[in-house]
Amino acid sequence: MEITYRQEGDYLIPNLTLPKQPKRTYTKWGEIRRAYLKNHCLVEYNLLVIKAGLTAHLNEIDEQAWNMWDTIMEQLKKQRPAPPQGTMEWVQFMNGLRSIADEQVLHDIIYN
Image (cartoon, rainbow, N blue to C red; front, side, top):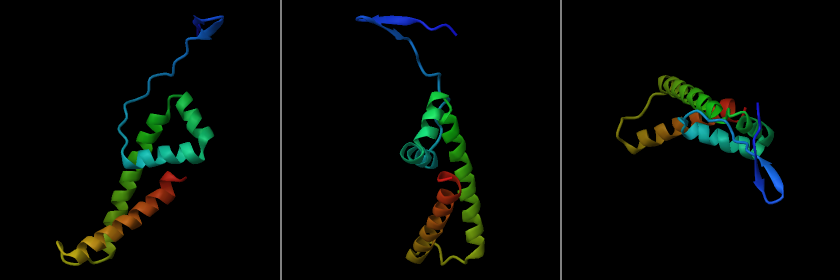
């Protein structure tokens, strides 16, 4: 690899750029993982940025998290009878299931 330089006053500055990142497709879970890495695992975060692997990592985590979340929601719906649809009790019930699924995904995938 040949490095080129540019003149900045009395100094030669290397012309370095980061490699191209893959297209960003991650959503909620990828963004939560990015914030977690940046705030709590800075070395891992910086290594992923330097190696141009951050976006790919976040896309993968996002996909895994959504798959796990869908699976958990289906299991919870089978285990617990839901109140009649369209009622406030149903909305509260579904919000409770979503909270359970969210917490499990956070614990098992995002913060690991």
